[in-house]
Length: 429
Ligand code: IMP
Picture (tube, rainbow, N blue to C red):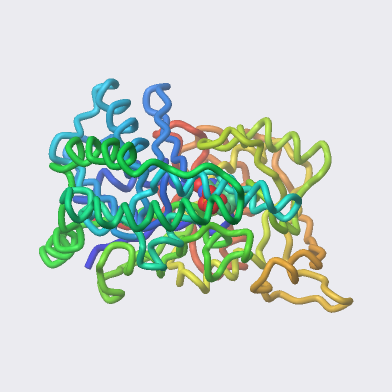
């Protein structure tokens, strides 16, 4: 049962795209299970930068089956734009893209609802990516959503859309005094998307299960990160899906017994975009320095990311929630040249030190980090391809993290490019 999940262990932007790109070489299929085009996965190949929002980065390898699972919310306009951009750069999508017929769609009114709701929240705003993700999942749970399969049948689509538009227009008017949407123009637009996407839509769960039964390698790609998970993250400052490994089963239609491993992706420091508590955040020059050196600007929105030290309390939580079997460490090279590196090993709250990650944002806001100081390293780790080539300080940093988390580093990324990677343990054979 070679199904490996790659999930973010922090607040997203850990560099999953590059690792998925590497692991995809040995996979038969690569599948996304949650989130939408709020994600942005960057892969650099021969100095060419590809930013993918919805399509798994496996698409950059010829002949890989790339699946967008039922747990993903899809803005079809964005998906088509992404497909066209890949095609124009010579990527063969052909038969390689399969979209679950049960995946829900992001509709134009979802973005309008989100914009109105965020602007009404003032300082308490979540700081979403503005892509309509939350309202699309709201409709899914309220059983008023529109799925990929619905837009393929004009009569069903018209009926469901009519109900949704009427309800949403009332909400927009009464709650926010915002203009509503015209049923016919949304219908026409999305019917056009349906014609374009039809040949890629199917029973993704069945295809995946068949591949797993045949013993093929399946790579399962998470978006965002554990601390943004709707259940296990810093609620309410989270995204609206289960970004942690548990979401993979429901988001793809495969059973937990199929999963053979879960690799957590950990950035060598921490970043966060949007609102919400972040105990190890650096508000000083060093924070700015990490942002500039690490290129810490959102791949989707371009927003500057908040930067801070590595947080072991939060990572311990991620190890447990995901049942991590190993981890990949990314952006190690960004810490090159520091005399000392701080790592948070506990939180002080109401005079007591705890090592337990609090389950909600309001408690986390009151936590002060307790740091340990580790020695830095002067030599460059940039582009190194073997553990033995790393400066001893960098090796010690990795071993220290392994010791604290009780799991091993399987991969270490030492730069942006595809080949700037140390493989400690292969996950696919
Ligand atoms: P939403 O997912 O657009 O609803 O945004 C909810 C929160 O998740 C906001 O704080 C976003 O900044 C954050 N978020 C969503 N997607 C990503 C991502 O791919 N990387 C990092 N943060 C994200």
